Image (cartoon, rainbow, N blue to C red; front, top):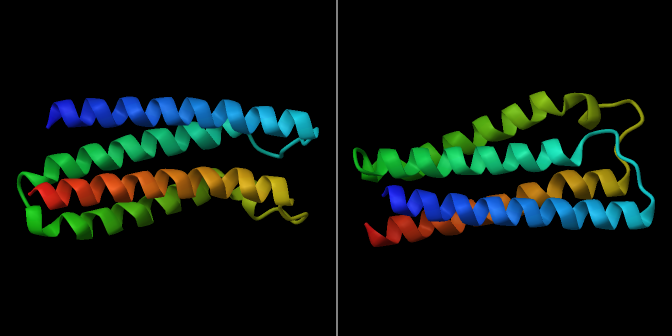
Length: 126
């Protein structure tokens, strides 16, 4: 269990760092400035993904049949915290520009897909 968490965390860290630098590079080449920090978006997603995966691994040993429900609940908590942290940018009167929308949504979707694939692999092995 702890080895899987360590491997998953390493993969998420590498993808998070790579995604951050790629996103920053593309934004700087386009000359786009954002109303929020790209680093904060990626840090939040990396930390939340690792915490969700670790919690699922831990609960799987005790309540394997309820793991899917835990994952759905954790997703709601993750999205709620994300909205609370970035509410000034998301709900600003000026609205979000297209690069800002992409910078917020692409990391969320990438990490969500990774979480889903990892969870399905865990559940299929049990």
